[in-house]
Image (tube, rainbow, N blue to C red; front, side, top):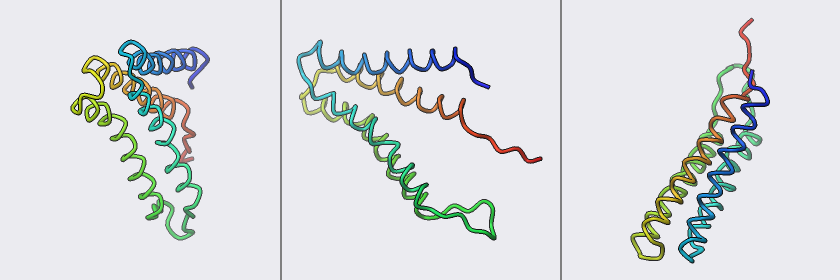
Length: 128
């Protein structure tokens, strides 16, 4: 079971990820990389909404509806957008390459923190 130390470590890594994204904006005097933060906020919403809307079938225990699949697909689109948006902005010379690298590194830390949090604190069902 995850304890207080893992929560503190995850919060520290999350803060470093957001700091990298904010520094990618502030150091290079261009606030376009801050659009990546919108994908951090929007990415988990489709999974949460679609999981809430989907109902479980009584006959089959491992039921996975199309609504849940659509939520996973839209979440995947937001995550890919979060990684590719800095590439597109750097290719269009809207931001510099170091700002792109810092923004992508921050995104890796933020999404890694979200994945680690769900791994450590997921409710596991026992088969007993």
